[in-house]
Length: 241
Image (cartoon, rainbow, N blue to C red; front, side, top):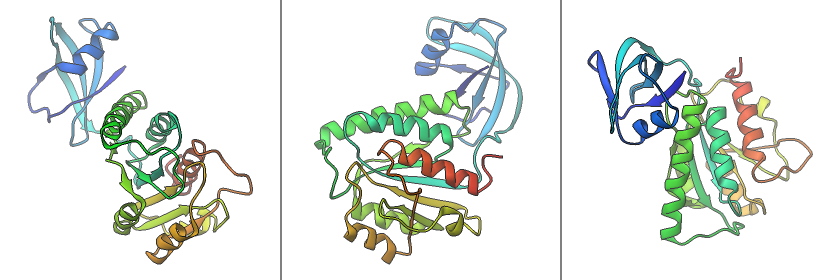
């Protein structure tokens, strides 16, 4: 069954898909009588039936409503140092599938990729579109936000608001199992680029109450580490059960 996200709450017994949603519905070759799922900004899952297809919209009848229960019960923010090339596309897609709630691209001392402001805005817009597509494919209850790129210092400040901050460090640290002994409501996870982190960056997060963590003795690629780290966090918080 096709999965869509609405921009507004659905208050009547019918609604219309327009814009990109309508285009996507037509790409899927939906027909009258087929059932689809719409998820509202408030997390309501609406089971609907296609009633009419016009040149610029797909009209549906709402069959039932219920709270969407597909979201993890821990809010995970990924603070990802910009990797080289198009690796961030892959990271965004797979982390959304795995349950990340927010992604904050950041520039650290060892980032090789340093796009100018205009290029960065285009990249963030593309990553947000990738997040939307991944959320639809994996049947998420929300579309995770991809924030504007920030300096490392700003990311470290942003992370202060979470319950737990986990800094995945290539030179070692605690196991995630030992860090997440009490189930948190929110987790911030820091992942470096190809060159890892400067010691001063590690110390900044530790001074703010964060904890250095390890993913084992093997050094993972920049695009592998966030997936492994997020999977461990989801497992330790019982979101893979």
